[in-house]
Amino acid sequence: MADDTSIFIGASRKPDDSYQRPERLLLQYGNRHGMITGATGTGKTVTLQILAESFSNAGVPVFCADIKGDLSGIAMMGTAQDFLVKRAKQIKLDPYEFQEFPVIFWDLFGEQGHPIRATVSEMGPLLLSRLMNLSEAQEGIMNIAFRIADEEGLLLLDLKDLQALLANIADRAQEIGARYGNVTKPSVGAIQRTLLVLEQQGATNFFGEPALRIADIMRTTRDGRGAISVLAADKLMMNPRLYATFLLWLMSELFEELPEVGDPDKPKLVFFFDEAHLLFEDAPKVLIDRVEQVVRLIRSKGVGVYFVTQNPLDIPETVLAQLGNRVQHALRAYTPREQKAVKTAADTFRPNPDFSSATVITQLGTGEALVSTLEAKGAPSMVQRTLIRPPSSRLGPITPDERRKLITESPVAGQYDETIDRESAFEMLQKKAKDALDAEAQQQESGRSRWTIPGFGNDDPPPQTTGGGRPPARRASNRQTVAEAAIKSVVRSVGSSVGRAIVRGILGSLSRGR
Image (cartoon, rainbow, N blue to C red; front, side, top):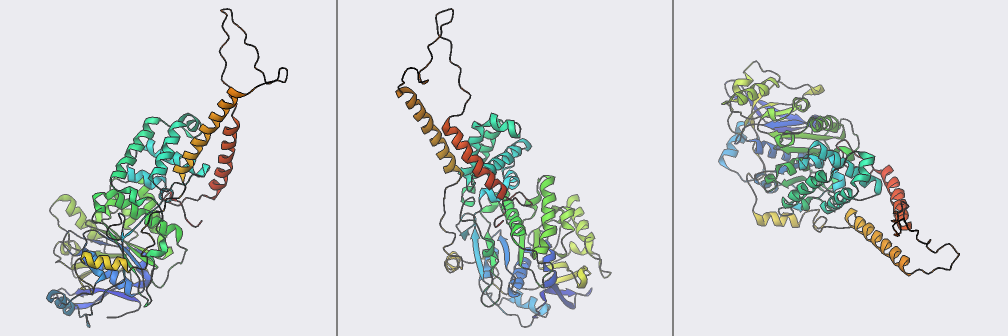
């Protein structure tokens, strides 16, 4: 079944359930995106596994999330089991060979894989606001905070940097409000409390350095296979908003960093977004619009995005319209919403006169799906009832010892294990505060110890008494101290040069390498 121009998905069936033909996904259209949908237990994970295997063998790197731990078996060689061998015979997969695949394990918490980190600056205000579920007013303050950081040359790397900046903004609320609009201390305090919740949920592990290098998820092996990056997401799913925001950030980073390649012979990377409903659930329209824009444009960077979810209704129509390669497993139709989902899924396929898609969707067995991929000239193929091929790698999870061995032997071993904490906003703001206090103390000390020569202009004028015999109250000076002027001058010069160099991407994240 080897073919350099396509990957084998399975074999379609005739109305009498006999073999019809192999169903393939053309590599040249692998970057036209796709989706894998179906109810729980219908075989979505195995479909993801066989697609990842096939893309890897074609030399295409893959990034995917392992929600239940089952996908980790892709790193180990499969074994012959009766039901797998039977399926191989049904679809005429001959020879049916077993192999292990080059896998790099990742984990935001650094427990079941190499740590993945991003800096606060790279995440940007829009995605952070989405992650923190901020109100419109609080999101406005977050945008102001990033604007201040850009202008004043403050590096936002980890959560303590953002916390220090927010505290600084609260102290300067009147000054900043005059420039950018109302900044209230209660709103800043609400954001700070939300940051504390994020810390308790483990986000501290995610924000920081060294940040993930995109090149490390786009590796190929010496024998030409694409590396499969598997994100351990079982624990991450306890904070689904962090999971969705992270994958959205990663997708936007790919969009910002990769060059335009047009329509390559095969994708540069295939990105599987499992539990895709978490991305769009309760998302504001501006975020959905930008996701649709990224999905539409990222294909010209050679990246294929495949959404994996239970229900096609989970994906907005504007995004659904961009997905050319579709694998639809069985759906249930017990409730009005499920019946609507069945109709939506059926209507998205090019009809097949041999059967009704709406009827067949509810009758599909495990490991069976309706499949439609892009044919020559990018037109969708007629939908076919298809038996999905069995995997070549292990079906099921690997053991903890096997995982540890693979992590130790990984090509990125040692590169992300240790956290780097360089000087950033937290340290810079601390230093500025200390310098200001030192300058004020020095001025006060100078004022107490100075001596004057009469007539040389340094002596205080004699106090003038009022009618009650008391000297009038001294008015506070509006002039800056030398230290204040020097600090503001430095901040302006640094801020203007850094501000000109800052470029934020389509989702507001900081573009590295620009």
